[in-house]
Amino acid sequence: MHKKSDIIWIQGITCNGNTQSFLNYPNMEIFLKRYNFLYHPVLESKLDVIKSLEYNKKFDFLIIEGAISKNFIRAGVNFYEKVKFLAKNAKYIIALGTCATYGGIFKRKNSESITGVFLNGDKNDGLLKEFQTKTINIPGCPAHPAWLVSTLDTLKNNGFILMDKLNRPKEIYGYLVHQGCNRNEYFEWKIDSKNFGEKEGCLFYLQGCRAPLTHGSCNRILWNEVNSKTRSGSPCFGCTESSFPRNDMFETKTFMSIPADLPMGVSKRAYLTVTGIAKTFTIKRLQEKII
Ligand code: SF4
Figure 1 (cartoon, rainbow, N blue to C red):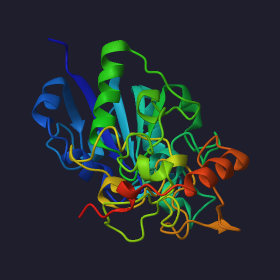
Figure 2 (cartoon, helix red, strand yellow; figure 1 turned 180 degrees about the vertical axis):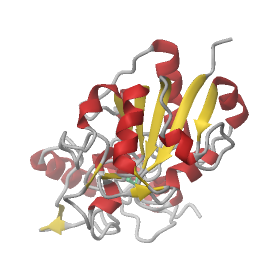
Figure 3 (cartoon, rainbow, N blue to C red; figure 1 turned 180 degrees about the horizontal axis):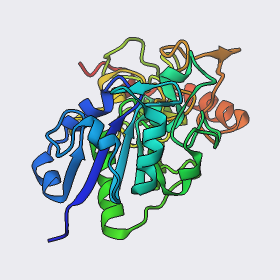
């Protein structure tokens, strides 16, 4: 039996969404046999918020939920100063969620003063950039609880994790959200979905689905173990990328009927050729309503 790893989970500027998401983790009992919360904002833990911010011993994981600002006061103390103090003693730092990773939704109105942990948008200019080498980013609005747990387990068991250039675990963010969507056939044959919630059609052409441009595992590691946005008929918003949130998230911006943003790595020429050919065929089975 491995020794339990200690976690301090601290909240910066946040809506609490990643905590809510984590509380839906289905194997919490097993998780708590391997991990020990020195502090968590809502789960039972050994320390209170003030003591956790002043914790002065080495520990395993500092999980930061929410964006960072030098002006943010939490529990009467300057959050930035305290989190910097904690970061020095943590073996690994997990930036959990899109706000902790890039600055996220709160950064949109305060673009100068709010950042992620070591990233500021997609630049390595976050307020805690000196801790970049031990920070793992798990973006998502919110992040899926299994993404967090698998990252913790990998670090705990192996002592390292493969990451992309934004320090996101490759196992989770090495794929696009488009991979695994059960509408891929509609995408290939360029058959649009017209309304939210429809079972048929692809949401890329009219409804702004960003899955072909977004790194994540929403269609491989399902939400609540059963579903994803695109499976239920709502477009992917691209919430794991630094460009989130965008304006007009439910629309596909086009120029001369061609999507302004094409699937990642696909040239305009390749897109026009493939969709042009696809459109010349009528696949009766795919034109029919399922429900
Ligand atoms: S709905 Fe989105 S994720 Fe699904 S096939 Fe279309 S573009 Fe890909």
